Length: 161
Image (cartoon, rainbow, N blue to C red; front, side):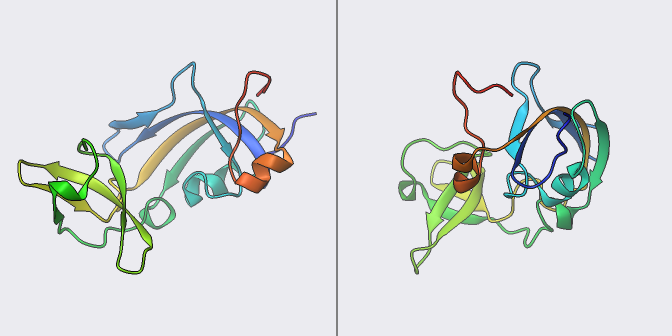
C-alpha cells in the first residue's frame, strides 16, 4: 500500500533548493535524505502544502514565495552584541537563541563576526527569497505516537524508512 503524505506521516525526501538565479542553496545528500514529520512545522509551509497527498516515487517542482517560506525581511539593520554575550565560538550563519527581558528565547542568525562584536540578524538568512525546490519522495510511513507527541521523526538502528 502506497501511503500518501498527510499529517502525522513521516516522509523521506531527496531535494535540491535553488534561488531565482538557479544557484543551489542547499541539497540533501544521497546517503542522508531529509526525513520530516508532516503537519508539525518541520519544513517551510509552502513546501509542506505542495507535498500533501504525494506518494513514494513522486517528483515535484515547487516555487515557494517568501511569505510561505522563511518570511519577508523585516529589517536590513544588524544588531551588534558584545562577544562576551556568547558562550564559545560562533561563526557566520550560526543560529543562536538569545533571551529577551521577559525570558523568552529569540532566534537570531550570526551575520558578521569582528574583534569587538558579534553582529546578528533577526531574519532567517533565506527571508525575502523565492525558493525553488526539486523534490523526490522516497518513502512515506505512519508516524509513531512518540514521534507525533514530540513533533518530529525519531531515528534508531531498527527504524526502517
